[in-house]
Image (tube, rainbow, N blue to C red; front, side, top):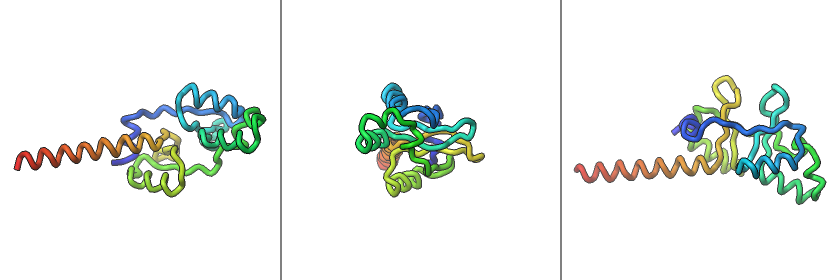
Length: 144
């Protein structure tokens, strides 16, 4: 299965925040949208970084409540690992495991941001694949 199939199921909506927004604004957005990460943009340049719940927690742990008044650009991950729509789910799982992150922005064939995949999306996809395989095997055995 390909990353494109995950996006077909979950949709391609992307929640973004500007690099100049405060960490407090980002935390409210994450809570309001019930998401674990937000894409950080800089004008029309597109992907500037990613900010996760973990980044917010680490910022507050390191700098206390003043971190919430600082901009997301101070704490975001700037060197963002991305994947392509044509990448396999297996490759994506390996990337997430190796990098120890739970959200990966997806780029289309023109290197334009077209989605965001979470580890939850990957797990949901793998469970569905496993159930389909089990059903197919059951049907095959029943027909034999």
